[in-house]
Structures are given as structure tokens and as C-alpha cells.
Length: 476
Image 1 (cartoon, rainbow, N blue to C red):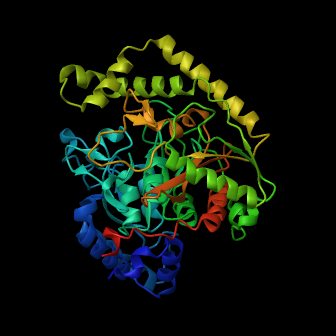
Image 2: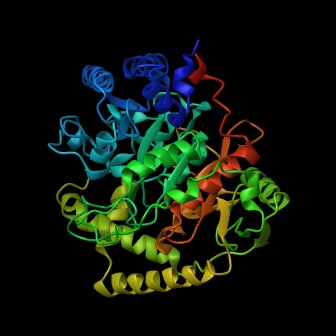
Image 3: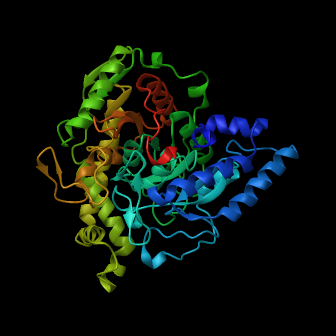
């Protein structure tokens, strides 16, 4: 039987620990037991520091007994994404050449989470250098979906999402360029927030300000995600975009379905006809659009300006990959998997004019998005174009009869919103007839991250999907 502590929400669990109802040690041991039972099948946690976690949990209980000040995440165990640097704990990036790399320092968001009282437990699996939305690599293999072990958990934060769904931890960090928080959240029936760029400072990428790739929080529900987000956000001198305040007033009262009354919602089921979407996914998101209308929202078919967004995303992504790994690929053509190598080579073909024009287009998209949100309060769309697919595939090559040419094509539902600089999240919305999770993507105005999380929490009381656990591996 599963220890109920592993499926207790992070907000409630933190309250229980602070009140003394349970100890940090008890919470840690419950999650370690769940990992031992189910992780061999799911393969979400790829590095585990039991000794270090136990010592940290004992110290957390000591500090509580001594009456010391406690952070908001006090006693909550977390394994960090394996692309985030963790001091003294290996960070492989899912690649053989760094399989034994041990950083000397923590990334800023990791340090903030630990400073807020979380217990470092280990690392969660990623695709090779976080490229692609299906989590597999040559170091640790594939991460499987707790709702159906034959299916993908998504990516690149797939290990994080699967760890949440399987009860291995109550909160998880991730990162998102093309949907790496939103896609796995959709696949694993959890919440993943891509914040407004700057809301979580990008302190590590000190050589260039790159607003496409950012860190963000995940949780089994919106309130837990907001709790973690509160520890990650805040100004940092190294990132001039990090001046966004987190508006705590958005959580001053309990989120309710009535929060949607009077809202102007733009519904973009195929992003204005720009992307194919599986019918079984559309069935879920269309039903939830109708539910929001029934809750009092004005729901209209509409979409922000996304013209040129695909080119912006692909150009800047490829340019960054060539800058990071182009010389390595030239020296060793077999160093990277074939689709990552292709993406790096695409970057090598770009000119400075290509990159500048992409920046110009991104500027237009950001400005037009600002105008769009003077007319609408919220955009809803599919978080992923497909339901979880077979884990032995590298990536989908066809959607509703439309052939896909590259590993990026099936990820457009989330990544076309990336260049607009908006906060976006995936919240559990329903299941396919086969019982596979489907997420609803919610996109808000720039800087409205806290309000977006509140609306996601209100939506959870309409959909009721966040409380549905995996019926297989995670309930051993």
C-alpha cells in the first residue's frame, strides 16, 4: 500500500511538517520508499543521494525543534532536473561525455529552493541536453509515464513530471524553451509553468540574455506550483529582466470557479489553423472551453499574432545550439544524437542577418501580444498536439494524417507562444478514452504569472482531474 504522505499536496505537507504533525525525516522516508518501489519501472529519478537527504532532513527537524526560522519549503524533498547544476551532486545533461560531471556550485534557482528549506534528494531524467519533448538518453535510458508505462512522459522535464505523478516528490523544478515544462505536465497530469522571462532570473547564462529558455516550477496542482514558484522568483543583479514582482494579492482568497465569470477568453484550439492536433486531444480541450463558458466566461475563437513565431523560435534555438556545440560537433560528428546534430547544423547555416531579423520579428510579436491582452484576459489552447505516445518512438512523425518532417514539428502548440514572452502553463484537463492525460494550456499577459496560477487553481475545481492518480505503478 502506498504511504498517503507521497500524494499529500506540497502546501498541506509543508503545513503538517511545520505544525509537527509529521517530521521531515518521516516525509523523506515515505518518498524514498516510493522511489524504491516504483522508480525501477518509471526511471524518473536517475541520481539519488539518500545519505545527504537523510542528513538534511535530520537537520531540518533539529532546526524546527530549536525554534529557528523556517522557509516556505521546509522539509519538502525534491530531485532537481539533470540540466540544473547541483553542488557536489552529478549533473549529466543526459549526455555520455558529462555522465560523471559534478558541479561545484548550485544554479541560482536550485540555491533559492534549498534556501527555502527543501531537502535535496537527487536528479530527474532529461533528454540529451534537454533537446526534444521525449525523455530518453544514452546514459539512463527512457523515462516512462506513470499513467501508462508503455508511453512517453514528455520532456524535456519529463523526469520531473513523472516523479511528481509517481509520488516520488511533491514539487519539481524544470525548464522550458519549446514546451519543456508544459508538454510533460500535459502528459503526466500535473501543472507546469513557463514563467514570464525574468520572473525566475537567468543568472547562469551570463554571456547573453536569452529569453527563450527559462527555469520554472511544477507541482501536482496549481497551489503547489505557486508555492515553489514563490521561492524561485525575485530580482537578481545578473538578470536585468528580473524586476517583475510576484503579486501575492492574487492568492489572498481561495480560487473559485467564479473567478472565470466575466473573463474574456480567446480559445485557440489549433492556434489559428497553424498546427494539427489529435482529435482525442481536441475533444478534451473543447469540452473544457465549454465548461469555462458555463462558468461565466466569454469564450471566443481567437489567437494572438503568431505569424513568424515558428521562424523566430527555430532560428534563435538553432543559433544558440550552434554557438554552444557547433565546434564540438565539427570535431566529433558522432558526439550528439542525430536530431540534435541536425539542429546544431541548422544553426551553422544562419547569418547574422537571419538572427537579427528573428529578433525584429520577436519584438513585433511581443508588442502585438501586449495589444491582444487589452482585449482578452486569457488564452486557452492545447498544451500538446498529441496524447502520450509510445515510449519506444523518438518523436511523433504524423498527426491526423499530416506528416511531420522534424523532431520539433509536434511541439509547436507550446513553442509558438514562446517568442511572445508570456507566462504559459499546462493544467490537467482530462483523459483520452484510453486513460491518457491531456493538459490545457493557459497563457496570460506578460507578468501575470500569479494570476495565471490562480486561474489554473480555479480551473482545477471545474475539471477535477488533478486529483486522479495513476492506477498502475504509482499505487503499489
